Amino acid sequence: MTVEQVQDEIIEEFSLFDDWMQRYEYMIDLGKSLPLIDTKHKTDDNIIKGCQSKVWVHADMVDEKVVFTADSDAVITKGIIAILIRTFSNQPPQDILDANTDFIDQIGLKDHLSPTRANGLVSMIKQLKLYALAYQTQLN
Amino acid sequence: MELDLTNIRADFPILSRKVNGQPLVYLDNAATSQTPTQVIDVIADYYQQYNANIHRGVHTLSQEATDKFEHARKTIQKHFNIPKSNEVILTSGTTHSINLVAFGFGTLLDPGDEVIVSALEHHANIVPWQMMCERSGAVLRVIPMTDEGTLDMHTYAELLNKKTKLVFVNHVSNALGTINPIEEIIKKAHKTGAAVLVDGAQACGHLKPNLKKLDVDFYTVSAHKLCGPTGMGMLYGKEKWLNKLPPYQGGGEMIDEVTFEKTTYADLPHKFEAGTPNICGGIAFGAALDYMNSIGFDEIESYEEELLDYATAKLNQIEGLRIYGNTKHKTAVISFNIDSLHPYDVGTLLDKMGIAVRTGHHCAQPIMDYYKIPGTIRASFAFYNTKDEVDTFVNGVQRAIAMLR
Picture 1 (tube, rainbow over the protein chains, first blue to last red):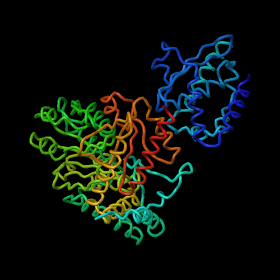
Picture 2: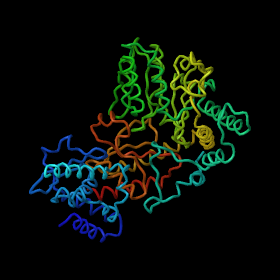
Picture 3: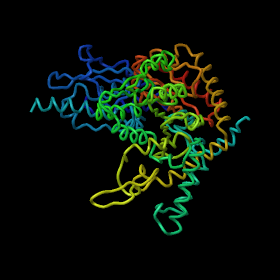
Picture 4: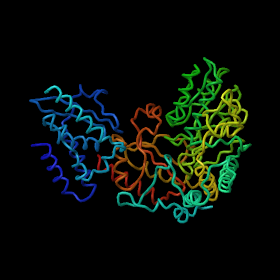
């Protein structure tokens, strides 16, 4: 599936809910399915700055596709990073760089998109794209 | 006398708005308090009727604005029982006030001199002094804290010595609500010849300190913590100290005579008020004090204590909930965590329910390090909060726990 197809899938899943509680409960559940980062990568260097909770992200390249793993000490943040990683993981680095993230708005999490929000969603997107950029440079 | 909550709440338009579809329950008063119509009207009136620059104008508007601004200074002086009106320096707030003193005091220090900070401070009462120590070579000593969130006064007494030049503590801890024994701190410091600065940012909206009686050397206040506007505050300093400190910023208003060879400075308080001040903010600061005094600080104090006891008892019934800062002597601030839950998660869900709390380290990382936690959830109450709101808040915490566990 392409990044866009995964995003459409997520939008459809969230469209089943009509109140915030269900959306948040689902997001918390998604956090539980997050591909967890190996403990050896759970270092201070891999912490994303700008989040009130801790978020660790690691990226590998397998068959010219970027594979992300992550973790967070807060479950809502874990849900957010899980959603992002589901869209970006196993994708070619250039596709990750080209992807837009407007789908966040469509799943009712628009308030998380403001750069001043303490959850650091914007920092997370930036960090995932930085990894993609690094791997894209390797490919070139 | 009982507070008339219905009428008081009607004074605050913001309290009737909705957040995320729910009636707002505002419990972040330690970060900033809300503004009553009486103060909002004064702000609007200033811009609609007599907006002008002050102190030098010959025209009517300028004179009216100057009179109101200087009247506000007198209101502030009277409220805090400050001996002289020229000891009231109007600043942009506590952070500005502390930096002003730290900048000047550093010039009076020699390498090896000692200054004392407490472990319960906001970063605003730590960092400017660290910068001062770097410039002057003075040594920073720390009064440790105890498990219940109070200061270790025994160690404080031991830290004081002939080299101690200045002690700076907050009146009330922003992260825990602890009311520090500043009378004792000041008396002990003065015995060894040290001056004391008290950061009153968290006290001024809940208590009415009598600065003359306290005999404190410096005291700082932020207007937005007492129903006034942001970007406005006060530094009180004893005249003898303010005369010793060099000006913090240069500019208009703070000068006596300027030539390219030499400039002489204006007298107090203008020496420390360079540039056009926050005129409207100063006038609104005075109006905010008038408003709070019309309700009465004794009444505010006893009602907030009642709210604190009520909320504490309710929260303590929640399994796995731990409150940080358990001294009896505290303002209506409850800093807590729920066993394994991250404060950020709880705060985010409460926000979805229209409940505003603060989460994180509250700009007091040393306290969080002491308890070995990343942060807390902090609910901080004001005199306009109700027991019904406490109930909504406690129910909200329980709902959040059910979703997160």
